[in-house]
Image 1 (tube, rainbow, N blue to C red):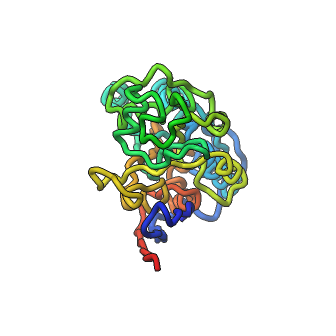
Image 2 (tube, rainbow, N blue to C red; image 1 turned 90 degrees about the vertical axis):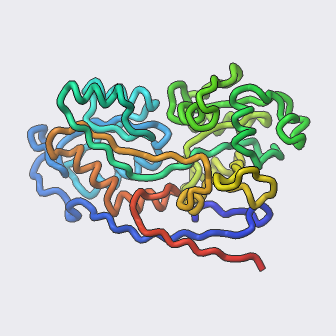
Image 3 (cartoon, rainbow, N blue to C red; image 1 turned 135 degrees about the vertical axis):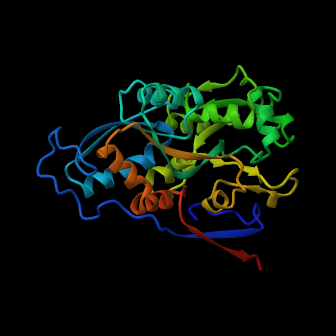
Length: 328
């Protein structure tokens, strides 16, 4: 587990070990003799991909590792909001994208008209984290409270639980306009209800963290991979600035005690107790077995899945063993 749960918040600590059974692609490197454009194979050539910028840290690790393994493979990644990434794929500007949702019916219809069968591959399960200023005592939140906050029904911290009575008005902040976290909150938290007019975008995930760290009344929404890999120096710096809220368990109808709340640890993504989770997909429009297929196979394969595991997300395929250590 990459997060350590405080004893006062959780009744038990869970540890996670994963045995992965996905095969990695061509593990001995590229056989290509040159990186020219005509040599487009699963392990050589050049490909443009658009990636939801919520997943920038972890996908940079995938791309760096893939290119080190295959010296003639060149993955040119553009990190951008989810909607823009999907538009790139539909407009044939890129052969593959990595986003936190599958295709909508109207998007599938675009490929149907072009007689293209896109490959949609589930590669990991991600958590959406709620972050707060370290001084905010309201660190245990239910889905109902989050809905009220993000729709503006509750506009002051003192009306959430009464603990944060001195923090004043709630200041909700997202990473970017048209981002996947904004869409996720509207789909899965507010259930289609409009976001409060006070909601604004901070332009990037690092700026989002800095904003929450300097505004005690702020509440932010961020992809968990920005704060989950505690071996990463940047993540360590981020976590010193903010606190991660625990959310009422999905399987508890009315959370009322500390053990009913969980943070986005891998174990709780695996058991599906953490309620704010979503699936990550590689979607390819490649008609032949080229570099796009090779990179997707790598991300979905053994080495790619191990990168997800280390970074704090839940790999898509694997046998999971959870060990519960009771408090003494």
